[in-house]
Image (cartoon, rainbow, N blue to C red; front, side, top):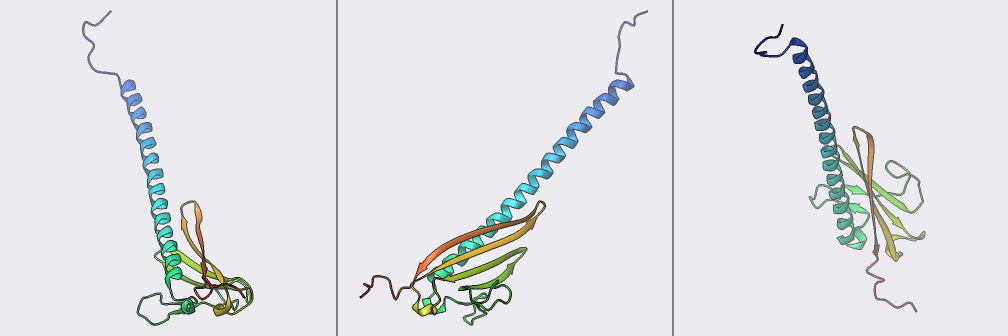
Length: 161
């Protein structure tokens, strides 16, 4: 016996449609979560790059005798004197690498001045400046490392005799 007009759906059809919609919703939510993690990581990496670049520019523009002194808060008084004595954040005493470190809202910045040769800063012709910014995200620790070199202005343009 056939019905003239079948209207509506069965309970089974409704359950299948709900299951399909649920799977699609879960996939969408996973995609949104993944996108949020990538946006957060990109934000942290952008902040890390800005901090490292600012440090390198500050060290490239400061007067040569003040290269190992840091005015972190900008009040004109030195807050940090970079040391090569093996105490944190310096890794090894006497290796010619002077280090300092600070925190920036979830980012750790460490910067180093490497003096080429075992001579005082005033006598060295060139240094390597390194800025390293680390942070933790959902996938573990991330590190951004930038380097530049700077020549001692006392030796720029001079001819060795």
